[in-house]
Length: 114
Image 1 (spheres, rainbow, N blue to C red):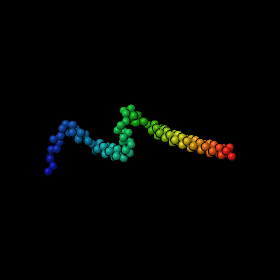
Image 2: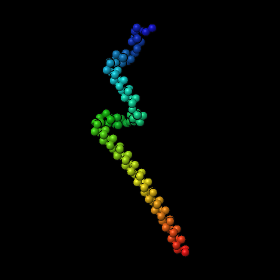
Image 3: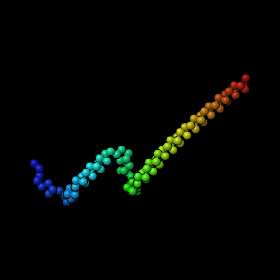
Image 4: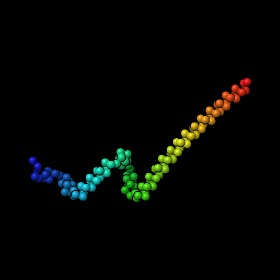
């Protein structure tokens, strides 16, 4: 059986919360819950552990600010990749040079010994 007076058992805070729930507020809560659910785990982690100034920036950020941040992150990622490729190519060239010098040294020793 349903209690005919369920609000009588609630605390003042609980009652105020329920009384303040309009249709629009409930819709907003559902939308916020859906948005949170759709976030990637990395984004949730960022929001949970962000410093207060980061959250303040996110609140004030315009679309241009977000686009600039996105571009900057892409630029840094590309720069890091370029750095890794440069190191790889440099190491490969160094290895080739050492190999050529070693072969030259052996060839020279073979020619001089005859």
